Image (cartoon, rainbow, N blue to C red; front, side, top):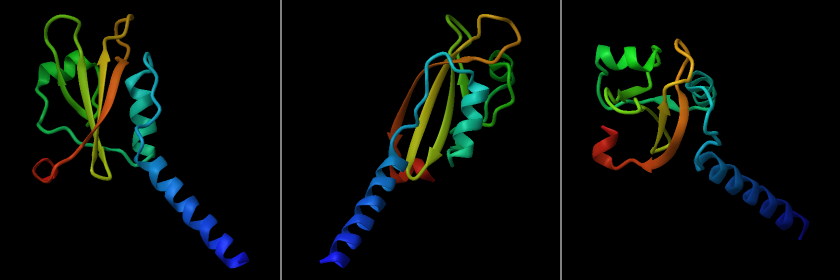
Length: 120
């Protein structure tokens, strides 16, 4: 009986760690994208934009992060950063910082499942 309980406990702890690994990371609105990028990459999220960004988008973003996917040239100036891990894509959207020459701030984020065609 003791072995059964030990084995059950180990199985539950493995299941808990897998589900925690697959959850969306805990981000906060207003965080600097530079801080978020460092945190995400240290936790195994890899930069994964679908296409190469254009020069004006990097200028709008104000950084050289390899996760930059695109920036809006009009309106509020949203920028999108894409990351990938374990068949999931994490999208982080920022708005420009209030002070010039500062990194954008997180506005929202979400996780998408990758399909076979997107993963290639």
